Image (cartoon, rainbow, N blue to C red; front, top):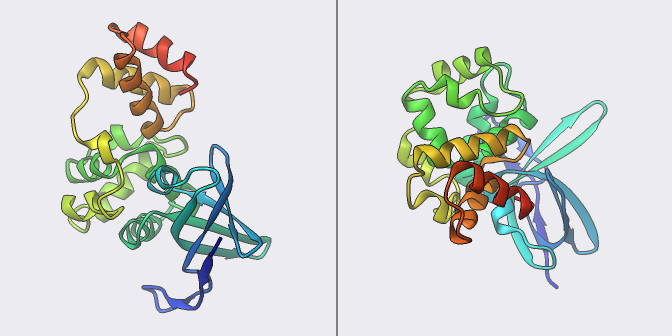
Length: 218
């Protein structure tokens, strides 16, 4: 199966990006990472929700990447599109938001939820992201408010991020169910999918939805 990796792309700050894009076969996925076989070399990437939505074990995936280089090693991050990567770079430009926290934000919140939270200064919603405290959430709102338009964020994954999850707003009861699942460690995208599957299976009350979602493994 064909695959490839692009190298030496200029970043917005003028520095060169050693690995900017990869295409290959998905070997395995975990809760946080995807391993992609590119020409016999396995690249492990920490991925956004948008990137995870494109990946299925055994299938081919195309991801735009950001390589973090530190003294103790290198970490590769994967995104569904250049726009989503740009959003990640804006998030990590905020003091206190490192790459892993930036990827956590893009995994826990869909693009339109993130846009709405920043536009309306909804610090409480941003603070639902695991590892993101109130003070850092306030910094994100303060520094990015007015810099990220709703249209820009919603298109962050090339029209793919969120997908069907963004077609309909959740009811207040379903938002409670999603919040409960996220409190148990699941990301928002998976929690929303599980809640909708639970309804399709006949679950009605919030408690029934949560139980059905947990039984399905979210």
